[in-house]
Amino acid sequence: MKAEINGIKINYSDEGTGMAVIFIHAFPLDQTMWDEQVAALRDRCRAITLDLRGFGESDVPEGPCLMEEMAADVRGLMSALSVERAVLAGLSMGGYVSLAFYRKYPDAVRALVLADTRATADPIEGRERRMKSAERAEREGASSIADDMVPILLAPSTVETRPRIVRRMRDMVEANSPRGIAAAQRGMAVRPDSTDLLAKIDFPVLVIAGSEDGITPVREAESMGDQIHGSRLRVIEGAGHLSNMERADDFNRALVEFIEEVAKQPSRDRAL
Ligand code: MLT
Image 1 (cartoon, protein in one colour):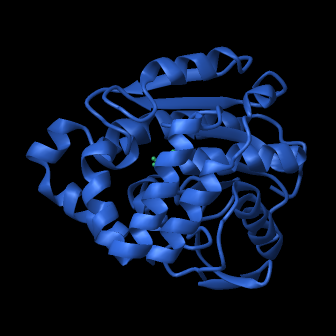
Image 2 (cartoon, rainbow, N blue to C red):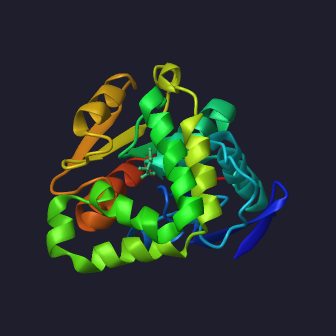
């Protein structure tokens, strides 16, 4: 389904009823990376996914695509769907967007799942790498980025023994527009540090980390979790950066347990 949000078309899906959980995907993928999580949750709550601007079947605006703009799209989608507060579940870039969302709209967040992500900004070398990667996407296309990303996003054991996951990931990357990929890289490069937000969070937070995540290692997840009062950390053994796809059952166990607990807590918003 598509909604007109902030002047562009955003593709989304909305299944189930009750407390809203909005899943925000990683770079450079699309909303279908959450298929297993939606299947696990749609009978328990309202599971909403979206293709962020520049990805999947959403429009590709001129870049850079800032995390704040993506967060504003999530807020706009919530308004379009009459959702006042939601649990946000973001993986990697989805986590950057979730924190940008919390900075702008703190009252609209009921709980957070921060998976394989970090609150810190990029160091200078990281920004330079992104700028080069953006140019490579524009010059050589999405499959060159898929080549770069397979060994980075997935654990070595996944790459060696689970070709279907590798194929699914590649298909998602290759279906994206090089312009959208470049725009998101440039947007991530200039994202601000969100570490200052962590101590202010006063709702439930689940931090998830793949034990073999080479992009956001477990120690970063621990450090982020330590700064969030009352947060809990779940390490998904054998998973790399895409922990929800690589070990969907373990990821879903942690997710479902968390969502059921959050659902039992009284919400400040009676509409949920
Ligand atoms: C992602 O998975 O969203 C990316 O690895 C995030 C990043 O490049 O920092």
